[in-house]
Image 1 (cartoon, helix red, strand yellow):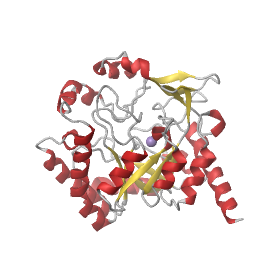
Image 2 (cartoon, rainbow, N blue to C red):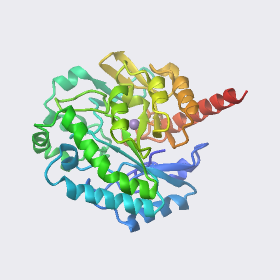
Image 3 (tube, rainbow, N blue to C red):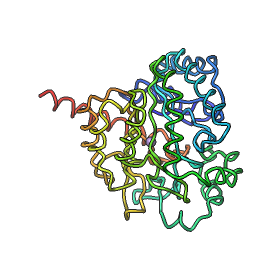
Length: 352
Ligand SMILES: [Mn+2]
């Protein structure tokens, strides 16, 4: 389970501990700004708090990458140095998995945070027409009313106040330049990753295409394999997020998983329901509630020998819960139970 820390999350570690089969959490220092060095003391305090609840810290999601690194600005080396120091501190505290993304300006993008489904649950949803009609600077205002008081990852008000400057930074950055900036970053961090055996796991762009004219590259099989070859080291790996790659119905998810054998270090498993090819809403994890064959996704992960952490992803808001959109307890707990059921079935079928 993803957990945002006791200062930010409505879900407690004690609750997570009671979900069958959940042994660890993926967490972060939610208040650390991108580019800031994480001290060993703070990392250790997070680890210890989690250990006291009977769980363990399975990895970090995310250590955010400063915009200067993504945009390739002249001051990027300073921020990469800080990133390396954070990785070293994590390695020295025995943390070996780091999720990150390389999306310019915006993190994941949705146009609604509480679309009501026929069963009365509410979910995150995306409509391309709504994005096309929106000024990016208004994007933040348009969703800010629906966050249930939570600060949404990647949508922090301080960042959104500077959205114009952020767009300016990327004026000359196209897909090729973004690939080059990613390569530069990876080549610089690989030595510390090798030294401390830290598996870097890039999260796909969500949705898996360009929004607001900004470049986006971690979107399909071709690009992700290009990235794997570009820095051909097992520590340069992937977070396989079915709900993000799956935003593009052209992406064959089980086939992508098989093509990434040995390089998937972390898995986010969730389902989406397509209304039209550019209009989707999040669904329950169960295959029949959405558009993906979740059994085939779990089976592909099992067959490639995936042994990293796997977690349910965004859940629906159900049973009157109030929480950060996508990150309530109840539906993610149902998702975890379902994924565990699929895994057990696949594993036993594989042995019979
Ligand atoms: Mn994800």
